[in-house]
Image (cartoon, rainbow, N blue to C red; front, side, top):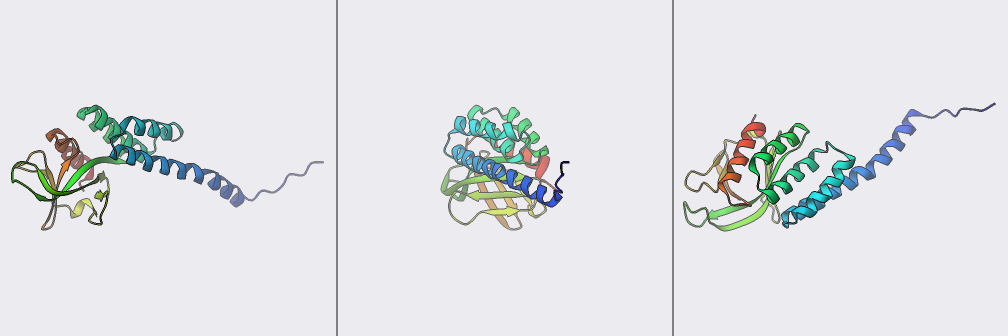
Length: 193
């Protein structure tokens, strides 16, 4: 006669979670590495790394977001990027762009930045955030805190985010007005309250 061991459901859950955690951590590390590659302009390499993540987790929202970012900067197809960012948003991600954050504008109306830093602008359902590559002047605002996210009137290759009396000016990586418009459209579509 064979005996069937009594297996505790909690023990099974712990074993299952332990098996899942290294895979999730590996995915998170791969996504961080891909983001760094995108920042450095290594778009094809980042795409390859993110496609590997998506093979095991097809709806991983941050992998979808950064894959779209890499493809956008590689192809410069604004309509395709808008559609893919919206798909990433529906999966729980959003849109991420590389931007220069202006500390001051050199010549009014030219769009040239005198003093600036580089970083990531993230548009998500619950927040708009700026993550500088270095320094500690990033921010994360809930959509309800933002008074305005809009293309600059005098410098259409720039956009600003206004929160109360504070104004933050940015120029997107491409320096093109089309990228500014893409950011504004996506903000209006899914980051506003």
